[in-house]
Amino acid sequence: MTLKERSMNVSHRITELRETVGWSKNRLAKESGLSQAYISQLEAGQKEPTTSTLFKLCSALNISLVDFFTVNGSTMPPDLRRLLHQAESLTPPQREKLAEFIKSLK
Image (cartoon, rainbow, N blue to C red):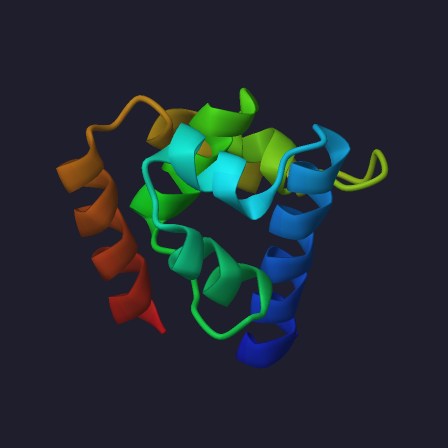
């Protein structure tokens, strides 16, 4: 999967989850502490969310990061799911460091 395809999947998932709970972009922005403009850019695939942003969105939507990446009952591999569960207990600065480390592996 290319970076662009992955970005579009994430943007579609944000839109899908927001619409599932019946929220407007403005409501998601308020609940997550992000700007409405940024939510719009994420949903349009113009921006890629940081790890911190994903955690804010998941918290606002009352779902786990694992749930964010689970679509139609299709889940990610167990090893990746385990890593995400471990990442959920990290502080925002630790999550950003983890994201930087992962980027350095590419």
